[in-house]
Amino acid sequence: MPAELRRQQFVLDTSLFITDEIREPEETLEDAILRLLDLIATARLELNISCHMPPSIHDELVTMLRERDVSEEVFHRLETWVVRKSPDRYGVDIPADIVYQFVDEMSDRVDRGLRVSEEALREVEQLDPDTLGTSEDYMTEADRVLSNLRDKYRQALRQGVLDSREDFDLLVLAKELEAGVVTEDRGIISWADRFGLRYVRGGQFPTLLEEYLRATGVEE
Image 1 (cartoon, rainbow, N blue to C red):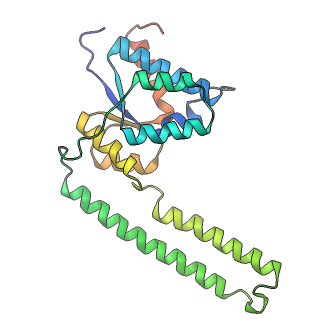
Image 2 (tube, rainbow, N blue to C red):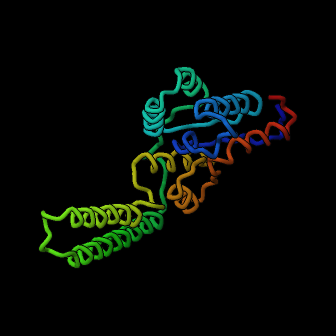
Image 3 (spheres, one colour):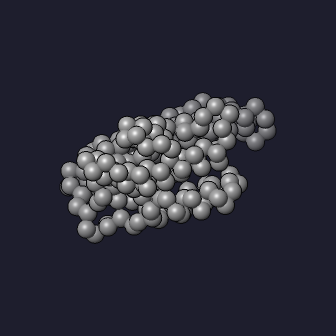
């Protein structure tokens, strides 16, 4: 192992393993994940690059992979090469400004969600009430309004924001370890930047490991 190489650590998000961006042409999801885990193993053994995952993220990933019927080999390699570690929620300091930004953003998103709801209500008011419960066209139009409301409401409140404890665990652990965040989630990327953390898009991570290995002359 090159003595001058600084140790690299990464905290992995669920989206890294699920995204189509890690797949090569004609490659299945399972084959792509196995290839990724092989890269992680080689980087660990040859370059001391370690990959971590909070237990909450690990459990979420296992559930998603079992729903996709991947083989047990995937879970064995995941357990071997990706270190599960709970973040030190009491020991990691979060700047007050970051908390302020989060509260401010959530307040703004609640207002946006209310505006989306108001727009949907006004749209429903324009429908003909005489056809309520009697016309299939009315019900189809009402369903369309409701579907649009769900999509716009979800986008207003959740897209690009930290919307789960798992996301927060990921960032706290990365800050604790001074590690890079690997994700395809736009909300996590946005907040990783605010936390002052390094981040890598999930689809670029296999190439990054390959480049580390190539640059140091390690044969895969």
